Image (cartoon, rainbow, N blue to C red):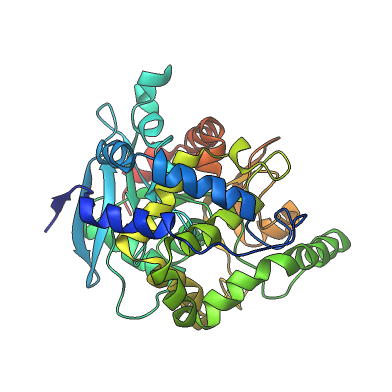
Amino acid sequence: MIQPFSIHVSDAELQAIYFRVANYPWHEMPDDGGWEYGTNLDYMKEFTHYWVNRFDWREQESNLNAFPQFKAQVKGVEMHFIHEIGSGDNPTPLLISHGWPGSIAEFTKIIEPLAHPERFGGKVADAFTVVAPSLPGFGYSQRPPRPWGPRAMADSFNTLMRDVLGYEKYLAQGGDWGGAIASWLGFDHPQYCKAIHINILTMRHPHGPQNEQERNWENQFYLDQVSENGYRTQQGTKPQTLSYAMHDSPVGVAAWILEKFNSWSDTLGDEIESAHSKDELLTNIMIYITTRTFNSASWIYYGRNEEGGRFLSDKDERVEVPTGCALFPKELLAWPPKSYVDRLYNVQQWSEFSSGGHFAAMEEPDALVKDLRQFANRIGIRNLVNMQN
């Protein structure tokens, strides 16, 4: 049964969080450390001062509650999701999935333009009905009984779309883990998920690069990831150990997440706020803290390892449903040459942008919406979702 849901954090809980933030026992780092050693100390002090003295959670809570939200049992897990019905008589069902360290707060700039394009100078005929779940174990969705990887989450999202909401055909979009979830939806459930649009490539070919250009990309990719692998290794092997510290420290959670938003976004130098405002950053962080889901959100890394990692198939199979690829230049996982991607997906649209990074829905919402709309029109998505099996 689907139940309406709204977000509400008690005053007592907010006061307890702010007390911990205000009384954090600051320690030292090298004066010239910048962000080189991790989240910058000077910025954290400025950030936490704003958090305690100026940040208005109630305003952000109200902004999130402006979207229609619900909960329903899906595969034994109470799933939270936004369900924005699109304009017109025939809006296309669209599932959008976030990742880590994100949340449904990533989508506040794109849901309304996708669902109601006529309000932004577009056509009603381009409207989507947007379904945006919190990943199992993230935010307002219940944690699964043990770590689920993106393939298991994709299966649960397909059940949400079909059996709970009644959408027999739909389009899926995602970045970060959402890109992996969309990939598994297209691979495992092509009779229902009729097309996917991704702004990250998380999957890999089991036989590796096939030419010099692809080999050069792979070599550079691994070099680029050396300084980024620490969190991934920890969360993919011993997430429980990390959780003890994080549950006890709102500042710790914030620092862990802020470092990624700084490293993975298209910022001007190390000016994180050239890409994201403090309010945007804090809203996302507060979702993790107030729901106490930092631990269970990290399980997805462990779950993917158990599912077999990044390989779709060891038989040279690929995602055969139409696929749109949106390449933003500061993406954490640099895209390989198109020849590599073509062996993994049935690529029908390949878009390269001049700005933007990992959190595309937050950094470049207009570009992402436009690209998704163009992809849907290119492949004739309304015909795909309305056709019979």
